Length: 519
Image (cartoon, rainbow, N blue to C red; front, side, top):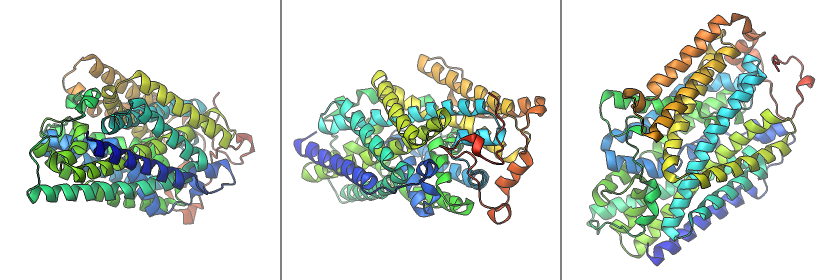
């Protein structure tokens, strides 16, 4: 990279870091209880929440990786944003309103409230932790590689900077601060990536200097050389099975992502939660119009570049000189906004689930869990490579679909689900997904099963939950009819949702608690 490009990138990254800290830390809202700290007192407005969800979902993979996939694989990669949109349709149809009416705070909270099992809650918390760490490690690796390529700094500086900002924002004001930062970052990403794409498109169509490939700094991308290929379900395969696999992995994976679902709890009621998801669909629809532009430009002007190289190399290829340096700096700012938005959201969601499961001490426990999860993510990042993080993100997506998706659907819509059945489904779905991911890493291929993981793991997880629940009818929790009515009746009839699993509250002090402890 040229000196001007390095300077512009450093300024852009510094700007995003400062804005994130200012928005998240300066005068954060003061909450009166730990419960309010966890979910921003359930006062987040739908469109603001929709912007935060969109920022969280448009991570490094969406901002940089999707354009690279389109450049390398062509139109077949366009099914990924379509699958994401389909996922939110499924979420709004099956999950959002009942989950919000349950009055719980996290997915493990919901599992315990609905099925009356402390052991199941702990088991679900481990799954939340695994998915969250996979996402955090991927964001940190991407930040390190991008910072190294754009500025020449060591990769660990990218890891540490993203981690520190995420921890500071999360500790300052919990979900309220994280939501504000993410909403601001969504609009920053949308303006930056759209504006730069339009400038590059005009430069190409108006006869800009677009034949030379900017190869300087490519040595920083060796870690991203692992191909997505078969490990990315259906990537580059225009066949019907490939398309269906892409739609399935995106739709069901979206439904089960803990850091996405936790957003439902930040709204005041079920209607506001539905409106948040509608807002998310609109905002994501607007954002996902942009990556195809970069993909087309990359296919023409930076052929052969790796997936996450494409976007960052385009300004230098199309507009060498000062203009290209400035555009590269803007893209650096947008990329770091993506890293920080996803990292903050994942960190808050995972820390909330872990602290509520381990202890009921309140905000102090949440802050301790935040620091512990961040340290674990940094440790795992130092022990892995960017190539493994690509597979890790896919693993996290598949894991959420094969575990929490069946748990949510059956827990909300089937009264006969038992804790034993849910645990069996988590074991089958999570175990098969882990085994197939390990096989991918080891180079072991099992034909269609290795290519289309979720076409096998998700149905088997559903079957396991249903079968084991049917053979353990005595473990259907007491009060299940009341819980089903709470989830499915409008608030005007059932009354406002009770905070059944309010963090920081001793369970013995709760009246009419539906929990059935099974220590």
